[in-house]
Length: 281
Image (tube, rainbow, N blue to C red; front, side, top):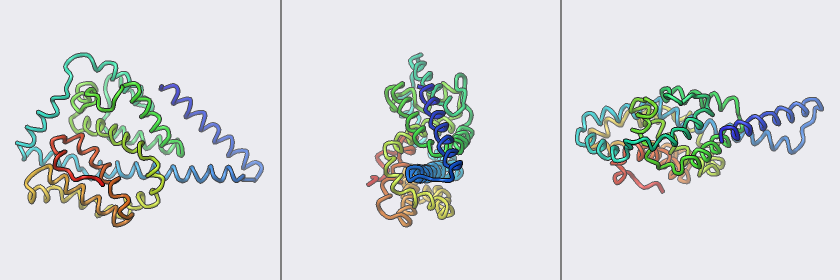
């Protein structure tokens, strides 16, 4: 699977360079190449949307703030640990899954045979790949995701749990959550690639133009916790806050999509909150 993806990557990039070079030599640009260049622009914008949303989550420290709330919400913390520990495997049955993940992360130039770096380093690797691959980034991401799922069998495999990431790759709990949730978010995005293409002209500018307001949503997590008196309700308040900003800019059609991107990660990281979270419609 890894070799297939690498060959796909190099073949497409080589063909791109060849076509573009011929066009420059002849000082011509066919209608087909114009469409091709337009596709480059569209896909690059999709890449930026994906990166911007993930970067926002990391930069704003949402998970760190939730951790602080959990430490003061002892009942929530204890119940969450009990629920998560149901998915821990104590035997060697995750060895094959690790092999699949080692191949998957090698596509982003990470050697995961022993350990993985902090999530932020992986995220920066992705950004580098986006810049180098340009228009092929989204296709490559979704193809890699599909190959990884075929290798593992299911994205819900307990070997992809937070604790499994911690034990298998020597990660902190926070980094393990980011890695594991990242797989789920990518799965959702790749299933909705067409929607991204239809709405990228609004989604990406919103992550930039409304950056201050989105940061306020994160800062208000603690305030929401104090008012609602519960971590789950505070997280749900954050989902509503971010969701409303995108609706203001892009209309109600993006409401469910933005809600589900955030909710996918939050439900995975905090399954005890599932019954509290709003419906994404």
